Length: 475
Image (cartoon, rainbow, N blue to C red):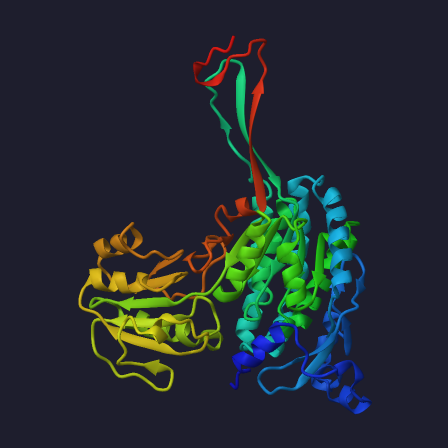
């Protein structure tokens, strides 16, 4: 499948328009895929020729108009009017007002709303998955699987809504209670990338909601229709529950909206998924205001096959990890390190490079796999860790000792450390994220919910005395 060139993708991600689509003649309107009979299913998602890209309880938008395209053949799908800075200001205000209502809803009740969102997504899973395939470009089964991932995280969040909280700790002082209290941060800004336009938003949105936060989403401009369609599904659930739509707000836009979110002190947590280069800029802008950020950035992931590896596992794993989603996953395998020679299929396989070649240390975001040969366990573990990113990694072996050395302090330094499975395809129950230039953030399962909340240590004196900690006498 032909892929949109990365420079063109970057152009669109910055919010630049290829032409003034708003002023195209009527003949152009008829060429939009949404007007063709075979794409009539797009209207099942509430999409039209011209779509508003701002939602804060009502739909609108006063920014520029972009046309979204199918990257497989460059055919125009439909148009979206993006947010202006004024739209952004209005949306943030309404989102913060909505938080005052949402934060008062008990967590299990919030979980019930998230359950309904998951059910609504289930009802639209095939048609929404088809839109993901059409607008993002991944194969249909992966498009549907991405929506399924959002459904799964909703199911997970429902149970979590009855379990989040902190411990009651023993106090050294008589008549005192020590409690760890967790509260929502408030407004969570979510900036997602083009490659997973549904799932990554779902990871953030479902968990943030049950924690008591409201969300403001800016998806990639190249997948704006997906952002609009998902938000329409969520908005209907909120409306049915008589809740403010601004709990899950949307501002489609480019770099101006992303920059505003990063610099805005009203955005209590900013979750950013994208390249390491842009992530650095986001981190600096958020840190400048002493804000909180959750970064999911690039990966340069290795699969290591030892001499005892089961080749019936290695081959399909390497194939899926290297070329799945056209090599455009952050967990895509970029390096295959083996202790034996082999025959490889060009052009996606590159051999003969040094393990520390600069190109092998660069995330290409394409189905290109570099193959190396190693001599020892210590050497190959070091090669795995020598790249700047630390997202995903995997070894193939039957040696139990080697497995636990790989998992231990001298093994892989990645956030995802696998054995006998690919680097891609993480389940939602574990925390997803990585170390070093991958950003250090964690989303999805385990205790990732803590990043969407603020923690307070509370000491309660229920006695009539006033003893001080550490036995201090102050008289």
